[in-house]
Image (cartoon, rainbow, N blue to C red; front, top):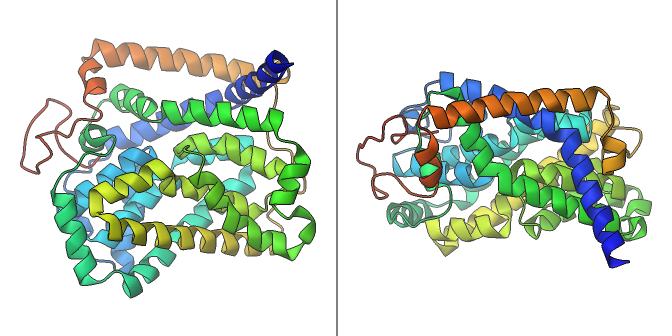
Length: 380
């Protein structure tokens, strides 16, 4: 019985992996091309304040940067230490994890294009909410406190990855995969377990599915707290979001859940190390409120505009259903061939040492210039 249940969970995980593999590869390939070709040196100069122009610039640069959540959080601190406005740095962080091409493609494949549109509408709403909350709550004293704490250079995660300057597409591609692989695997395994073991009635009870308007309000509120306990961030959240959607969470709840990769427990601890306890608490409160606000806004507007799916059939399939000789299989095989070629080029061109430097701040955590070949300090 136990072995059968384990097999069911792993079968769901394998099926979801096969469904999204080609989309992940395509998304990271497009993202890697952009990152390798778009120069991003000294971008902190473009983020001097929290004006609409600076926030729009921060969002645009975040989309072009594209990172796992840990690398985005590390890079936001790097920008702040080098003179960027704190609000603009956090706007960059939000866009770098939640408004990126690979996330949008995977969401479209697993959940549907409506959710991708919701993500890209809700992201700017979340940034605006954070900026407004910061204007009321983020005092000059707190900013100085954050700057002092950030200057101490305490280690978080992906420190080296956040500072690397890579001009080779294969380098960016492999390093991005190295950064998110753990979260994708954990997310797929957790989603498979939840799909196999948690009955639909439990989800419907949790999400107040039969309570009409209350469910639309409750979904965006509970979504971030489910994510907070999941320990999964970045693209790894999407398979979990599919399970929640099939389980009955509201449309806005899915959007808020996906945004909540920036408040999972390990990242909250990194905020504490980076900026001190008080600023970390402020970040948790404001980011959570903004996720809830963006989820509520999207969850109210999209159904009114007829932009929500009519059914709850996100792709949570078993291995037997997914492993067929259809378009997905051929796309996956092509994706694996492209990945193999890029990995071969990565190691052939001397990328190996970069993997060992992912969590090592370059230059000992200081901001003075230093060189490491193709991976010297910069805003990735």
